[in-house]
Image 1 (tube, one colour):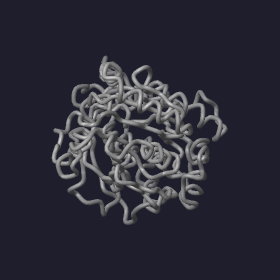
Image 2: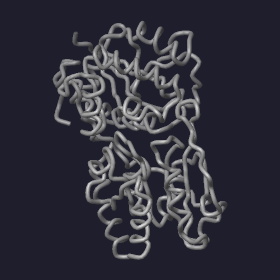
Image 3: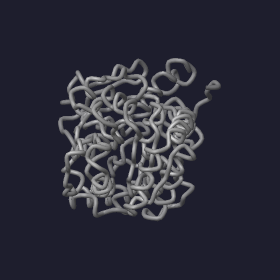
Image 4: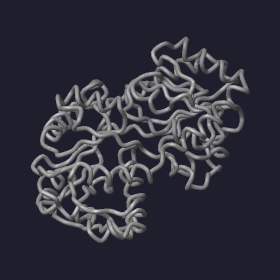
Length: 374
């Protein structure tokens, strides 16, 4: 089957903007721009983003070349599993956020990682059972799987028991953080200029390992440094971890892109103590903003951050403490990481990601079309 219509599962537009939703939004924004410039491709292949009928108009993106179409009467999982496959029955369906309808057999699915298999203790029982089942089914029935890193490619092949050749890699971009003007009011209203602070970004999931980081920060003198944590808890997805905060731990909860950019630009460094990541977008965002990065040496993170980060074993609290101390005391190391980070971030763009998606559609014979050089 070689469809000329590519349908996109737009359920992500109804969800809070976490990492996977960010991926979908930025990828499609870049795809829309490519379609604008590549008329040969856009005239022969139509992209339609299907969304539940009750989706609010005010949250919809203003794409010029990707049609947004409301359909069905249901919402949430029921819409995705029952109505979406009916409305997408005449073409290829692209699912960008780990999940899709199990009764649509002409699909390209993006699985960002295999964490529900590898770190099951991090998730609620309902979420874990649902995603394990759907990922297993789609892993075997979808025509093509895409993931974010070589690490995740290997993990998915292992846990889903599928051939590694069925899985392609598409890297994320990070330049979106530079498109929002920094909102420095978040620094002022939280008194973050009173003393240096280390920034951490992520949910309260166990595998994000924030509780261990807090223990390390508590070893520093209270007047020496603060730990600032940005990110929501998402209790419907993750099992939450009890974390004992002290006076040098400041939780900001959800922040806007403008506020996040201001935090990256003002932090002494960014730290990412995660135990498991399929990609790891925040370290690249930090690099793009000129913030030195300290990173866990686990999972995909060395693959993504390259030589532009200072690594540590995330379960060795003394090593984490020593890594932070070595950066605090070494200005030249801070400057070196800033320089390397800025160069590393340039390698990861949403335009490249969108071009790869188009190439995957064509080279995997999911669509057949002659395109101009992009």
